Length: 257
Image 1 (cartoon, rainbow, N blue to C red):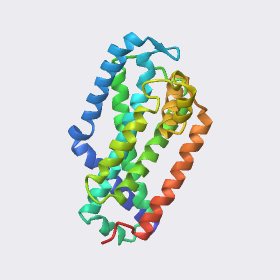
Image 2: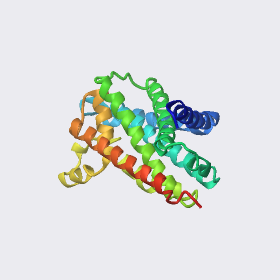
Image 3: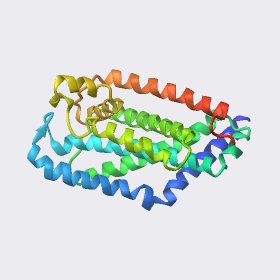
């Protein structure tokens, strides 16, 4: 395929993915906004008024970055895993695999679709948060970079889950039993400095902790971890997952009948 044909293939996959979740926006975009608004009211306003300050900021200001990142993670992941598994379940993915479209174009198209939904939901939740608190971004470049890389990372994870899933039930196992616990224990609602030393060490094994803290650093200027290490970790995971996804596409493992 020449460059023009590759561009047509990529834009077709991306536009299909974007049209897919915007067409059913009541199911894909509205629920996260409502859910996060409830988090803002319950945790930020009602409970936060009793907790007081955390890290030198009001509790509402402290939890908002974590809640935004949580919405980006869940929506980037769920978009790719549901879309790609549906294509696999309907056997329509085989048409793409037998076409001359390079595997990296296929992967990039689905990942860009997941990133689009993750960033769009993140933007919606950010706008909702402005009704509850006044956000002052301290490091704009870091904020944009980490939210984009996090969305890419979890889009790739959703792709891997979709490849290995054997049923629609399988695509909900990882979000329910892995992503949700890691997210809630990833410093969204608290600073790990409040934990005993043992549990601080355990928390450092949670990769979501690093992403949430870097995003909080970008907005508030505070973090429980080294920002540089977090970026390096995210980039390493992206590289490893990209190689795994391309390998799965190349071998056709669990994709071809």
